[in-house]
Length: 263
Image (cartoon, rainbow, N blue to C red):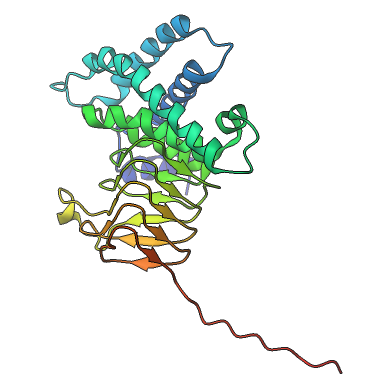
């Protein structure tokens, strides 16, 4: 088989002729610029807002395939939301500092905690998601997912002072609702009980009320599942039904220890 035949066959089997991976790359650049604009002390805010506007124009060109969507008008409204997002993220950082005895300074939280980074990119992407801006919010959170191991769908609703400890392996689905002062550990899944395309417009993921702590590798599934306020969910718990407020849920494994006598 000669090279010309191979080229023709590849072209024939390309199912997405308009799949432009520049959108992915430029979204990641935009995300980095946005993060530095909000948090880096040496970054000039006014100068970077101009750069971000240009980068956003490029994203509009690549992402807005439907010409009837007013994508270009999103940016002005988005910028107006940035102080609100930054205020929420500062509360998240303070929650981490106050809850984690291993955190030595607020600077460490902003620069070294993958959970904070994942929350930051989620909050920045969520604003775009609510505006209906296509593809970009999902690419933003997937960029954070790749770097941190935390997969937060930009459609999730998350309240104030959210803390993800250790990060890695956390999954939060699109219709999940998390209220204020919630703390979760590595490996937690807030997922759907059933997966079917027909459920797209339904609430598929659980609601976590305020002041809940969910320990490592707990799995909570279902759109009707509500974890009441002030609950503690122990590690490795599997929950598909609602839990009343002020409850403690523990998974108790059977552990067997066999000791071999000295020979």
